[in-house]
Image (cartoon, rainbow, N blue to C red; front, side, top):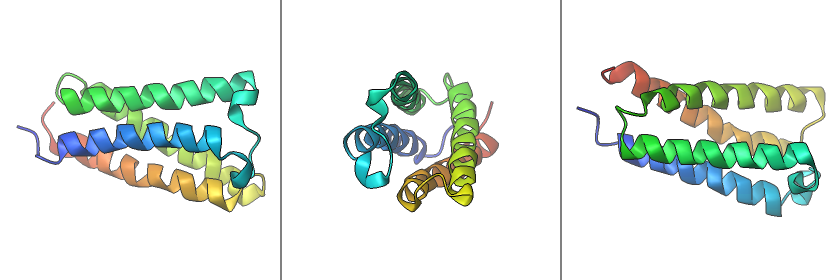
Amino acid sequence: MYPPQTKPLFYSAAFFNWGAVLILALLAHPLGLQPPQDSLFGQITLAAIFIFGCGYWMVGQSPKANRGIAALGAFAKLAMVAVVFGHWLAGSATTQMAALVSGDIVYAVLFIWFLRRTPV
């Protein structure tokens, strides 16, 4: 049995990722970034963020069957935080970008909580 918060957690994570794609695509300049859709790697990044959102939606649909996606998501979110905060500390990422990725810290902790407290 999974906690009742499981589905809303992963659905909100999906919307967070999809929202991040919109923010990065539409508000890149105010964030101090080059619009990611202007480069191959930027487009790949937007696609990956969007696809991870689809994965989180799948976990919300069937937590037990898609548990591995939650583990991968926790790792990916921690990696994203490490990369962005590393760049922020080095002065090559804006405070706005660091603020945007801070939501990933919250989701990583919640994903780990889910993984530790639910059956395999």
